[in-house]
Length: 453
Image (tube, rainbow, N blue to C red; front, side, top):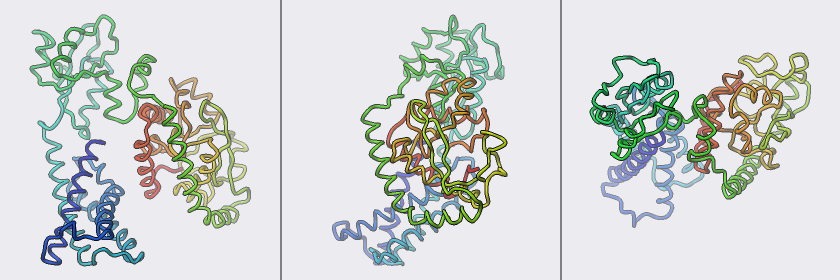
C-alpha cells in the first residue's frame, strides 16, 4: 500500500504541475518559463502542489481500493478540490500573498481534478489486471496455509493465489481443487504455475520442509518467504500466533538505536512545545467547560506503564465523572460509556482530552508516537494471556501510535491482542518517516472523529 500511495502521489504531483502550467497558458496565451518566475511565484507553485497532495491525503484518495466505484472516486476528488481551494485562498488572499490570480487558480483546479480522475482511474484499471499481480504459491495445506490463502484472495491486495502445495503428514484444510499436482517434482510444478513468490505456511516444518526444492526456487529467482513475514508485508501487523522467539532474533528490524532515540527525543520536545504554544490559549476555555459540566478537577491523573514497564502519571483533561470507578474499579471504556460527561464525550471524540500528554512528552515519560500506555491493572492480566506483550514496553509509549490509527478503540483482551500486532510491527519498523506517516494519519483520525470512546 505504501508503494501504491507513493506512485499515486508522484503522479498527482506531475498532474498538479501540468495543470498549473496549462492554466497559465490558457489565461495568458503563452507558455510560462521557469526562469521568468519570481521567488514568490515559485513558492506559489510549490504551495499549489502541496495543497493538492494534502487535500487528497485528507479525503483518503491514496487509500481508496480498486473495487470502489468511479462515482466514489469522483466525489472524493471533488471534495479534495474544495478543500484545496479554501486552503489556497486562505494562504494567498488572507495573507495578502497571491502569486497568481483567481482565474489561473480556478482553471488549474479544474484541470487538476480532471487529470487526477483520469490518472487514478487508469491506475485502478492497470492495478486490477492479472498480469500486473504477483502470483503467490502457498507451501502447505493446513490451518496456517488456509489463513494465508484467504489473505491473498483479498481483493485489496495486488496478489493472485497460484495454488497450494500439499506436504505429507499435514491435514488438508484448503480447497482440494486449488492444490497443484506435484507428481513430477515440486520444483517443476512451481515453474508450471508461474509463481513469483512462495509463502512457506507449514504448521510444522520438521521432517516436512522440502529444502532442496526451495533452494532451487530461490536460486531461480522465485522469492521464498515465511508466513509471518508475508503476513507482515501485506497487513502492517504481526502474526503473533506463528511467531517464535528465534523469528524476533533473526528477522530484519527491532533496531532502536541510540541515534534514533536521540532524534525522536529532539523531535518530541520541539513538536510538543509548538503544540502547547498553540493550544495553551484554549486551556482556560476548556477548563471552564469541564468545571461547568461536572464537579471535580480539570486534569485527570492516572498511573500508566511506560518504557521498561516503569509506572508514570499520565495527564489528560477530565472527561468522566470524578467518582467514575468508585464502585466498578479499573474497567475498560465501552461504547456510550455512562461515566463520560456531556462535554467529556466531545473531548474524547475530538481527542482534545489528550493534549495535556504533551507535558508527559516534554517530561520524558512519553513520545509523540509509540504504543499507547496501558494501566498496570490491565498489563498484569494481559501479560498472562498474550505472548510477547511485554515487548511493547521496549520503547516509550506514545500520544498516538500505529495501532491507534489502524484499529478502533480496544476494550477487551481480543482487542488488546489485535493492537499488539500493530504495536510490535511499529517497534520492528520504527523510523522517523514512519512516525511522520502516523502523525499524518492521526490528523485524519482527529478530523473525522474516528475511534474515540
